[in-house]
Length: 357
Image (cartoon, rainbow, N blue to C red; front, side, top):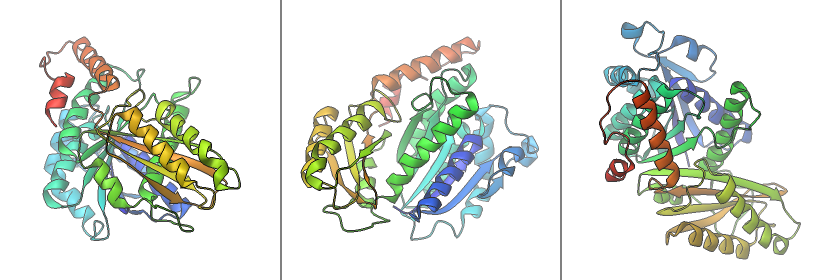
């Protein structure tokens, strides 16, 4: 799946660079362009991808200080400038545009949904937002920002692929190590998803292609992604149970939004050496995902790779009614109230979120 990446804000820029680097290192060639957009000059200086500084007349290159309303205003005012930077990057070859942002800060949480809206207005390709929720220890402002941004991004994007910052952080991680671990996990999982069907080494029995990814996400709303791997036996018949096992692990312990299993649709990608992939194992795992998610729309297929491991990559779409989303929106409400401001009673309710779809 050939994509163009646009990172908005500090976290968005770092994750975009990490995704582009992973794609380059693996030789997938799925990322066809990468741009980082920010209001803070310092956050762009250490990035190796192309960059665009916006809002200089408003904030002089110093960022928006966590003010996501200001971040949205600046993106709206500078949308033409950003689109000009993208001119020539989003070609007919690109199959989707992915806006990447941390949903807790100012520039990313405010600017990403605004940019997604502008991109959808101009391009007929799917526009996805890869949004990262702040961890529990990142402060009330970030929780409140993310609660508002989550709803707006889900409304404006064709699908919001959500990552909970607490999902992949180790309990003993420092803040820096925690962010690095999350970035690495995002790059591996999302990078493999984009590459599915692109870098094929060998011939699979039922290779996943980009249309299956697009169709899985077509219903909109919130999506999540999970991944797990294990050593594979030499013969395909030895790996029937291994495929089922790694699929269970991916869904139950490794999703980007934990404890959100019920879904409207899903995609299972089983990656590995074609000679070691069991069609029986893939189909058995697909049926298990169908049972667990309660969805009758579960796609499944192979991703042939030269590897001595077998891995399962799972995408769930339409999970906005999950307990995990309810829990986060409650946390965002408490954070907004603790700041002493007044909030619309419907601003953070999941019923209102459901109503967007």
